[in-house]
Image (cartoon, rainbow, N blue to C red; front, side):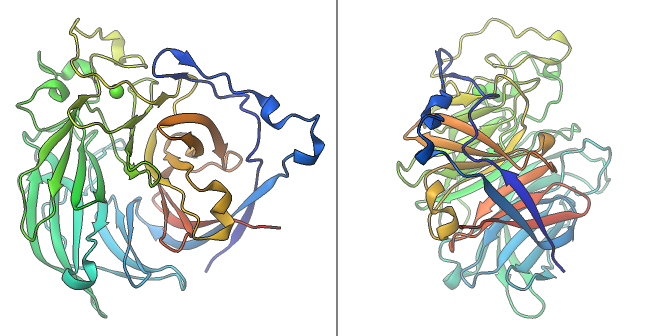
Length: 400
Ligand SMILES: [Ca+2]
């Protein structure tokens, strides 16, 4: 069953709320005059975004990836993997997930569970997918956990299941905190990228050399794996990561962008540069919990964010660059869509090369926590809602 709700979203709304420094110094002066009222011929029409619920009843859906046959795999944070026919809205659960997935909620803010899914570019031949999740290092529900990456072969058919599960990576050491696992996956050019968060909720819980800055600690980093038929050892591509949950490749430039949750404010968009240090916890555009003061350390090869939110917390998670395969979104080609947990922001970010030009906030009038935004190869745009009755919602921008 599906329903449609109309959302009035003036996509050309002047940037009255947003303004954020760029690269830490240059303030973007986004002028409403770009769409000024003295040129009535160019006055933007209000564009309605419609929402069609494709699937519901998912327990906090997290990741989504598309198969060559047009169906999608969707993960639930609470430990399910579903094969969804997006046209018909039918779904079937994939059996055979590893039994160390820490999917039992121990407290309301528990970040653990099953995270992202990525489909091997040679899936038609090898049936392989990748999954990231919080792995429990023991039988007890509250056993220490960490972020883990596996591959598996999906046997499709009436009773789909995972076979040949192989461990690629565990972000040791495990810890009893259940926050900030990261878990974002991206396949690009024969490589697989994995984000791993630093796992602390309070900055003060960091050891003298903070997790994200300690080369001996696997947490708080972004990794790159070469794709082979068997697990490979990763390279550390980035350090100084707090809680990154999503990466996306920018088609025009080949750059990889990623989101980063700030602690108290300071949510970021970054561009992945090999060997760069993204600064956490020494450098942040937000505040620290309980007035923690970072020790005065310099950060070598620091990469400041391309953009950070100075005026609000959006809790950015999944992101995707817009393709023009669906005429409804052709005008947004090259823009970056970012889902936000906080207040259910869906952001359309006007990007030019490696710069952020403007941010527009969509779906503000009926917000629901969003975990992810994905665009299928055919151009259809979907968001995943972070709810106990989680939904896959197709967004439509009807052309009139
Ligand atoms: Ca940073």
